[in-house]
Image (cartoon, rainbow, N blue to C red):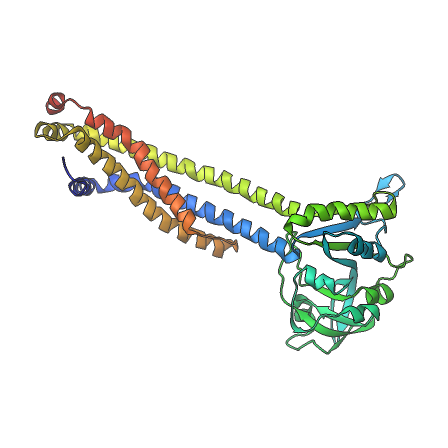
Length: 404
């Protein structure tokens, strides 16, 4: 019985004798494996990006929105009816054991002015818990505290986009800006957050104490009214309990369900499921390429068996066993598929980084993806190389020697 070393070099000599045919045979595997690598890396990158964007909003988070109004039979959207108040937020903190923090929000759009520069942006009035809920740190200065909220201090914390448009190269901390004509001292600059899952620039914002926003910027005829509140649960396992407790607490106070509680964890699951489905669809297309490559290997191996029938007959006549013949052709198929797989991995990695640079997409190439792609190429060689090898090993030596 021939050893694996002899079979290997016999296969290599066969490939050298038909270089172009061998190259074209492996091309299908190269395309399939590179497509698998590219699709997996793009899919994983999209999933990570979604997780990062959701995490940038806050972890273990619930959003409570006011209800909708109806005018002339036309129903408005959520948040159009002022049904939430500061006392609701205080009640949620006090009466919901699964809730860690609550940040009431009173927001609007205002024109900012500093010297000769001006910029229109969103202004968020909230409490100091807002920064903890969103895990938003300052890169310079400080955030406002409970005393600033209690005394309605005219202080502001700026996002990076606002700093870039108002203070070109200057340090804004300690400077005074005017918001809707009211002077506010800049006490801090927030770290960069980037885009939200909805594509909004989270750094284009100014954050002020909620009492200051209500008194000086966005006062309404409803004292204590807020636009929404962000609720942080104790942990990932407490989100459902926190959601039930928040609903029950506000319902008891309002005696009607004129509000909506949104669970951002469900939003994350929906986004991840969408990314996963898209990845599976793309991966299935890549697997079709591998299947086509495997059929190409089987086709070429069947042709090779037919061309080398007399060689097979001679080897059988001099003592080659069934497994020698079968092993030889199976090994040739495996060499073609694994060689194509290795080249395909290299092409796939290059293609992934090219896609990332060309379109700005996040890609993640992990050893697991490479292992999966290589395993696919190996299996293709085994599955599609077995039948030609089996057919060659079952030839009758006498008939094989007479074959022309």
